[in-house]
Image 1 (cartoon, rainbow, N blue to C red):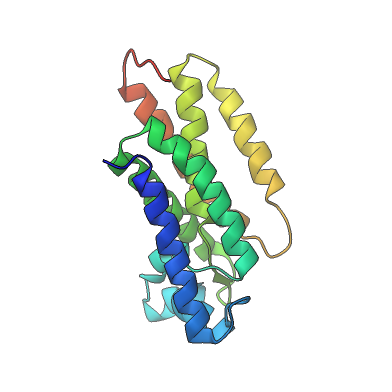
Image 2: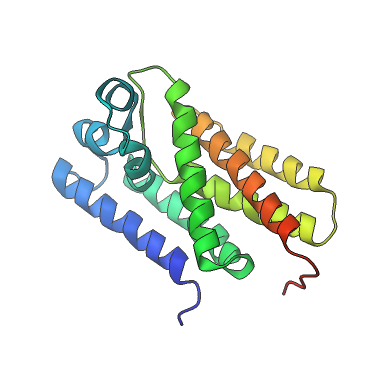
Length: 189
């Protein structure tokens, strides 16, 4: 079985989604705003029109090429580590549930907000990794929270959906903590 298969698969899905939205919008560098409203998370569409599937699809849609590249670099880094720590289905669970949780929290933003990107899911994977390692090695859990807060603060800038980042991170921290608590006498590489 191919090691790190889920991280690579998720990266390929994100790349495919970007290629599709680029073709649909007619621009490789920047995703068309109509395409973002159709496939990203457009709060008006989710809340008023019941397009709840956007809470899922927006995890794979990116605003521009740089956004995609940066997210895929972080997904590669944190995803590879997560695949060493968790079973494949656990890793996918962390990624998807964290991403959706971040997107649900983003519904608190103004109704005309459009969000896109894998960041909430990636923050969740980061959070699950850092707290799992701390808890498993008997280190203070608060250090994981400090690292997580610092990572969250580093992502703060104009146009960044901090609610998605926070929601994904908090969810990943909770899931990673529960995974660590459920396992006894684990020796990690």
